[in-house]
Length: 493
Ligand code: BES
Ligand code: MN
Ligand code: ZN
Image 1 (cartoon, rainbow, N blue to C red):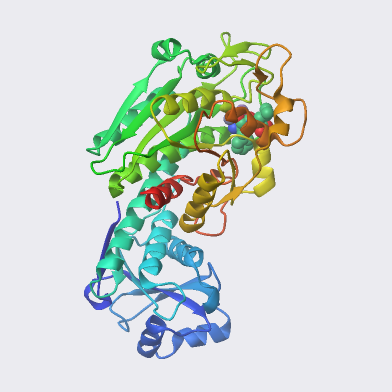
Image 2: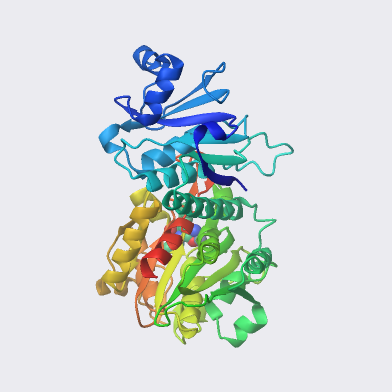
């Protein structure tokens, strides 16, 4: 865990000093540094080595000119366009530039940027922690080092202090969610995911965890969740966490539901083998949900929440569910299986019902639900479908503020007929090769109960095949959902 502090730059005993460099060059940090370095930054800009563009970072080794042996000049682009995203990216590229250094990093702030100092410091810290993340945990020796200590170079200031503490907590939690997504499916099963949830609950006084296994799921009538899990010896689980802090308002309970398919081979409707390894990330919704509610607890957010992770492994096997099967979900509705690869909506159906039964007033589900969502919006935005515009707008706003971006998409009753079944109340897929994210959302709608509900299809931004070029610079899980839920907690509290 990276320690985060606030102190005057000279007092920090730094291994590196970093400063955001905007175009044109200027601002407090740069001016002081330029004086001490005899105008070296300007010369580097002139020579074209340093550009000050977003994500463009130069590492300089010093010889006593500053109180640190290294300086990172981290580009943030045009001065008037600098925003949290540019600063997070600068944080991340700086962390990568210092991946062989570790140690203490001091960030200089720049009062002349159009981002207020607390938000500026928070974005730099967040980006540094996210950017220092290494997915190489399973290597014999992972050489990448994260800074042990980040110091925000500023005199004591309670607002900046609170902002960076919060940013560090949320970013660390996002990295823990990335760890879960990156865990190989032979290590992370529904059972071990349940253990991780129990460990997390033990870290927080007001967070409780309960793991429901097959027998209880059968008693609850969760025929959709259990069907998906039947092809694997790693049996399904419904992993439930309850966050009940003192002093929370009692008219709201967030219901957070996460698709947690620890591996999605597609089942009998098996997927093509190319790229199938990335389907270990099909539990990213659950990872975001788990560490999202963990972040609420760590931050002491005064809002009650229940999280349900619908965990199963979708494999073909002698006892696997099949196309043609008719399932009965916990809410009594029947589902004809058309495609066992449309498993996400099945496990979510029972989890949505469960959080409503447990009193959730405002429901948000996070799911890597449809490949078409990734085709439509790429790896940046998730799509949001909701039965309540106000609730959806709040989630879009939480996304805008946090960086876990969300874009609204339509639910419409006319989509419903494409999942009409001749035999059952609905079917889980359609032969129509159009609008699959919307059809999936319409399916979930049948299980969302009364009250605000928003479905976030995060198939794109959950798990990267390559660097995104911003503050997410390595392949694998992104921790999507953690920052969203943490911000949502702030907006509803
Ligand atoms: N987990 C997949 C969706 C997915 C694909 C997420 C690629 C991330 C990247 C989901 O379970 C799935 O297989 N969806 C199918 C649904 C279809 C069979 C109706 C899809 O989108 O192709
Ligand atoms: Mn699938
Ligand atoms: Zn899936």
